[in-house]
Image (cartoon, rainbow over all chains, first blue to last red; front, side, top):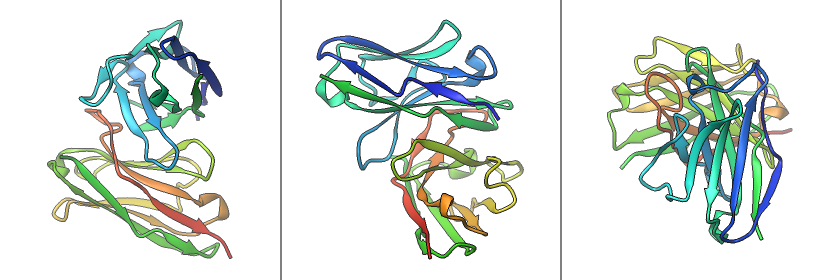
Length: 111
Length: 119
């Protein structure tokens, strides 16, 4: 089974920009992994921010964007707000989107 | 509005069984792949199982294959996870999710139900 790797923790200044990444042990992440990004705050269920690499839900703030960068999936937060402090999880799909593997999560601090 | 409400969690002894349910509303349940995802206390998320919209395909993470069974009742708009031979490491919040994987994807989540495996 694949292993998906994220940065364990990152810090960004209010108003700053930060990029979180998601790598696969099987090789380059592509659009065929249908990358997801989820935000989770303490005591809450995860919430989908981005799916299929870069698609947004109606509730996704415009300051979040997704891409493929250097063989990884990437989540870029531009103009960080205090309320963006949370855990961010990525999910990659394998076997023609039949099975999934989550990354270990990135704890983002806005400070 | 998409709503997913999990139930059935609780305290169970090692080796025991439990059945989780997820009641779906606000969308055409029979049209979507459904998933179970879990999160052990203080840990990350782990995909557990998927089921195709018609129940014709099921997939599991290696650690639960042979012990857990995902199923659905499209007439009742409900998703289930039958868990047997439970272990301490199965202790987690279990989330029901819509179309995390499959032919179309967007990812809606329930609020979760806690399963504790302990003697």
